[in-house]
Image (cartoon, rainbow, N blue to C red; front, side, top):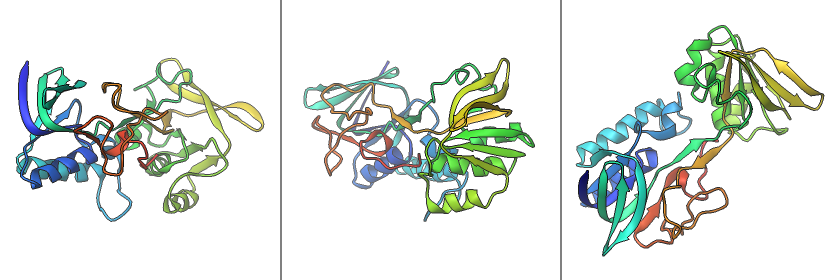
Length: 280
């Protein structure tokens, strides 16, 4: 097990974590970035960024990672397991060892929520997915369903409409929660059929997805689809943190205006922080 020592440890290499690491390095401090999976976080699932930054989410994340590495940041492949005070420093314990620092930035992000309906877990990778860009081509010229009414759901529906015969967009409420530009694009795409005030109650199939059961004002019925994509919110990845770091009802880290947590020397940024406004 290794032991490392830096001025700052950043937990997570999504956009928030990489951007924070770059700022630390620009200030002349040493930094290590801990990440258990692929760098980039949720942004790598975005095919086309909507805003001032052009290109795909994967391209943007790759640029940030390259800039951070070239500035001297250390990448450590590890799963953060706990955080505690260690004398006048902080210690992040991971499956790779102990990483000590003067300050810690928690940018561990969030994971996409599950709907928690029958068939969703059982048929994962058998037609159930949460990445339209990754898996959309498996459903070329077929019908699929997308659950959600936020930015990620609408953007995914648009990506899938470029490959699939029809996209059923299942929106729990009576209106979208997405950006106006995405709402307009969905309305202009004839392959997307919006089902408002509709919830998915089960994903159907045995060895592969064959349909989705939905409930609307008329009752329950089934749609024949080959793929199911759910985008219904985020769950902050903060379970490894001590109780001294306050969380809100959703589990997100509470910070002050300077992004400081209740634990001295520990800061939070990105989707793991309470008040974060992301794509979902």
